[in-house]
Length: 123
Image (tube, rainbow, N blue to C red):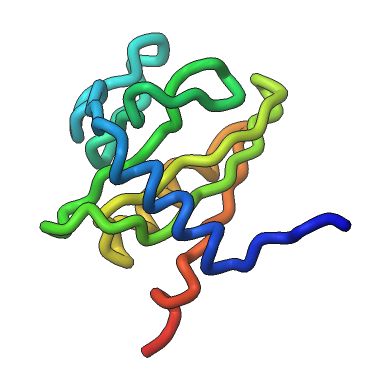
């Protein structure tokens, strides 16, 4: 029998991954993309060191301005130019920062959706 995880288990696993990883910011807010200088990062952008994603690099993340680096949401991206899909973690992001990230990824041949942590959607 296949065992399916609960939604809370999914977020708990992500929390454990973040808690046991080092955050590396390789593109600080205001810096330009290394291959596309017209693209400026609106927030700190980096990855979880010692992890891997579909592209072979570390799991990407956006780091917001909240003092706690709590995992608030995930952005799911489809890139037609690269012909790939991936996720990026949103750590410590305010609602306004989350909207900025969504706009950043919904450009050109890229489209994105935000998956908010369920307990973040409650009033």
